[in-house]
Length: 109
Image 1 (cartoon, rainbow, N blue to C red):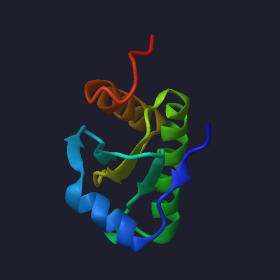
Image 2: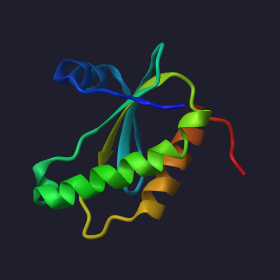
Image 3: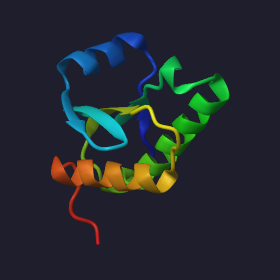
Image 4: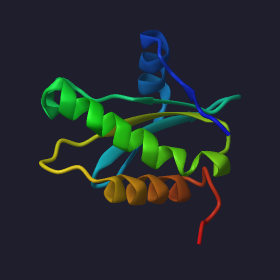
């Protein structure tokens, strides 16, 4: 199952205002129920130059894609916290914890 991407600034702003925020050590997730599964990644310039920001986006999308077959329809916004090092394993772990805690997926073994 492929996830749609939220691309319009209007959609992302509306999600950021009306969605529920959930925090983890490496990122913040803003979500709300929807009729489709859609996701956006927001990485600001405080994270570094474009090469570093694009790497963070790729890591987040790859980690998130592992959970898309198990997700209920909702819109999600992934916002990473500023850090010296970013790892795929940390993003994967924290996204999984958040999705389970908010009951957006069933428990995965």
